[in-house]
Structure formats: C-alpha cells, structure tokens
Length: 164
Ligand code: MG
Image (cartoon, rainbow, N blue to C red):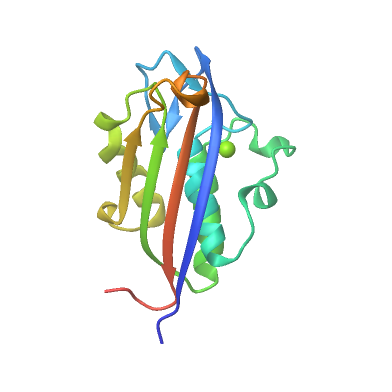
C-alpha cells in the first residue's frame, strides 16, 4: 500500500552587502548582497531540508545540524541536504515532488531557477522536473520588500512506495 507524507519548510536569512550569495546551491556571483548565516545561509536549501525532515517525521534542521556546532560554520548547505536526505531515505521514503517559493528583492532568481532545480535534484538523485521553484517579491512590504532578507518556503511529498 502507498503511504503518502507531506512536509513543509520555511526559512529566512538577513541579506548583507558583500556577502557571498548562495541560494538553492547556486552561486549568484553578480549579487551585491548575500544571505547571512552560520552556514552558507542558503535559505532555499534549508527550507527544503526542513520540508523533507517534516514529511519523514524527523524533526527539524536545527536538531540535526545545530548552529552552535562549529562543524557547520560556513558549511555548504548542499552537504547538509545530502546528509538529511540519507536519513530520510533510510526510513524507506521515496521522493514525490517539491514545490518551492523564494521571496526577495535581490538577487534576481528567475534566470537561475533551472540551475537551482538541477543542483538540488542532483543531491537527491531525482529528476529536476520533480522540483518546482517560484520566485516572487515583497512589493515594498515587510523585510523582504525592503530588501532586508530572503525568505524561502518548500512543500515536499514523500511516499513509502513508488509514485508513478
Ligand atoms: Mg537557515
């Protein structure tokens, strides 16, 4: 019998001038701002990790990778995704799909959507068509609209059987 599990993830990081900008595992070298964090600050990958852990009933990213642990200082978040996904698959789960949203003024996400899908899908060993990325802006409202932060959301479907 097929058993479906849904999970959601949300993350937000401040955007700082001159900070290296990595989102969805992709380096936005042209961006004047980048997400500040203990790791590389990749809010998109962090939201995806939380959605995967949530769907699998495995808690949250902070339990698995505490930001008080110096091992995770400046870490590539795709490496965290690799570890988290291994934990999820060890529980017998198969990837269904992910739908993601990124909210920020900078950098411009749209031209890099497919690169981000490829990066994250490669880590998960899945077809990039199973990950959708949507980009939107805060329209001047809230911290995203003022360009102070990047916020990312992810919804993931897992199953214990194969989804055709
Ligand atoms: Mg984070």
